Image 1 (cartoon, rainbow, N blue to C red):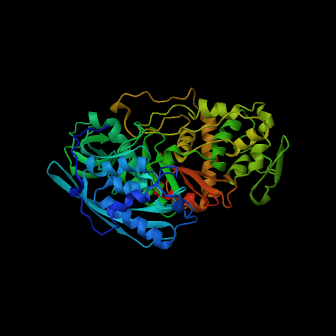
Image 2 (cartoon, rainbow, N blue to C red):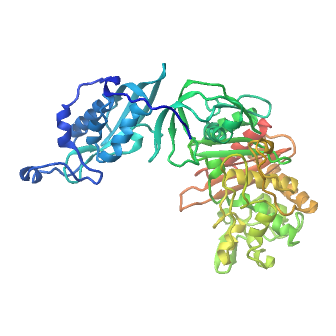
Image 3 (tube, one colour):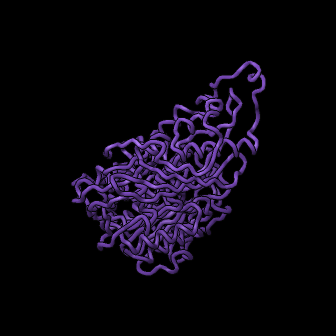
Length: 545
């Protein structure tokens, strides 16, 4: 992934910031990875301590570990962990490969066996240096055989983003940095748009070498999995970044970032239906796993857009035709009901059932399709779900597996084994709006001539017209009316809520369109679709793009 000369740094290059226990004592405190090891006399063996470490032991062990780490004595620090063989090479590479010195570690008050701390240090390489600072924590545990208090070894002890098998390095990068720009040429940075951090790292990995830039000098985390992008921590020398064009829109992205931050766990994606161009992607919290693009969840009643397309295609319903919506419905010994067991009066239309999110109106029509695999077929053939999307970054492209009986029925209302993320649902909405699947992209196809996924057929104009009629009704007076009230233009929507894993409050889903922009959002444990996810979608749609 990266290259750079390794220059050994001896312990003297580090600054010892606090006096610690004598290094001669470290050999007495060591423990092996399985909790065994250490040399003890027979009398000592009989006095092996058990139970959780005391506050005094936690303070003494953590202090000794910090002192040895700050002094650059990897072997002494590793002996104070419960996995000496795993800890020592990582601690040694801190100075030798990452060239991090002048280390100052400041512990905070312990909470039980956990000790938080901040690290302030300096990265120095080939005459260039920069400060590095971060916070992490460690846990002190009792050694299984020695009974000594030891640091429970995890790579995150050294850096919170360091995973098993990953390495810290400093040197000349083999992949030049990139300057990603939106569709109008606005520069996109992870500082201004935090959700784009993992995406920008991936774009650099994929397109950095062909973007016209030159390498700089950096400190980075190199993952064990070579398919994952490096995580840049410090830039000592920028080199010349290459330019990478994206389909994103800075205004829509800013709105998406604001919207998801209003909730503890939320994701949103916006797509342009006429082209498939992704205009915004945002997550809160931001993690290396991009929930908006890679998540897999039941999308609840937002999937009724697809189910409605199936029923309309088969001629089982029409938008303005009557559709029965009782409180409860049974399908092959499995009972389904509407929220709070509501029903609609006789003579109500299918549009009313769609706009009010009536589950039973859909369940009662399953037998008439005469094909349990009908929904998986239309998912793939029309909406492109389950095809191999080549967006420019890693995505999960949705799944509607073939099922039978009650499990197949659950899929009709977005439950059961259906797996989607907000990218998938934004694309489904875009397809319904135009009638034709256009694979979402985040960088132009011309950048690498990759082959985009194509669906085998489009929806008829009659079905498209009726789907749009029903989604417009949902936005005008149905379950999406409150959220979409502030959105202008030609607009439509669909709400959803999905219970996953027996949680107390369902996940809130919402998808909608305004003119030539479609967006979908999910708020974990947000309740009804219109209450939490609806305002997220509305904020992004108002930003346009």
